[in-house]
Image: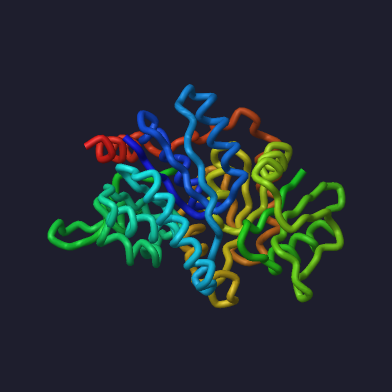
Length: 160
Length: 165
C-alpha cells in the first residue's frame, strides 16, 4: 500500500506529521514545499524502524502567484503519475487541493483533514475539495455535519 | 531566554514592535526573534537580535533553549509549544489590519486560551502582563506534562481503518 501525504510547509505540515502513525504499515511518499523536511522524515523513519519514505519538494505558491501554482500542479501531477499512490491524504492547502483532484483522477482514495486553524469555518481549500474527497474530516466537532443526508465533513478527533 | 516567531509566511510588525518596546524595558531578559522577510518598510527591532527566517533545525534549537515562546497564533508554533511543554504567549493576527487574510487567528486563540501553558494577548497592550505570567510559569514548572507527538488515537485509527479498507 502506497500513501502520498502532501501539504504546504509550516502549520499544515506539522499537523500532517502528527497523523503519520496511520500509514506506518505503508510505503510513505511525502510531498511538500520545504526541502529541509526530508531530514526530519528520514530521521523519524529510522528512529521508528520503518522503511525509508520517498520525499519530493514542490514549489511554494500563494493564490496570487498563478505561474507558480501552475508549476506546482504539474509537478504534483508527474509525481502522482510516477508513484501511483493508493491513497492521497492532505491537511492543506493548495498542494493538497491539487493532489486530491489529480489523485482521484488516477484512481487513488482521497482524504482531506481540514486544518485545526479553521475553528469557525472550514478552510477555503477544504470547502472546495471536501465534497470530492472520499473521506472529509474537520478537527472541530461543531463544524461537522449532523445530518447524514447533507454533504459535509465528519469529526473523528484532532491533531492536538 | 525568550524566542519570538512570526511564522514562515508573513511579517508581523505590530508584534515585533511591541516586543522591541518590551525588550528595551526588560533588558535583563535575552530575546531572539524570527521576524519574516524584511522589506524597506518593515519595522526592525533595535533591542534584540533577529533573523528573517530559520531552518527547521535552527527553529527547533531556539525552541529548546528558550523558557518562553512569543508568537502569532499559528498552529505549527502552538502545537510545537504544547509538545515541548513551553509556555507560549500568543498575539492573534487581525484580518482588519491585513495581517492575514481573515480573523481565523482570533478564532484560534478563543479555542486555545483555556489550555494550560497558553497565554493570550488579545491586543499588543496585553503582552507585558501575559509575558510576566508566562515567565512565572516557566520558572515554577519543570516537570510539566508534554503533549504527545501524535494526533488523538481516535483520529489515527479512523484514518488507518480508512487507508486499509
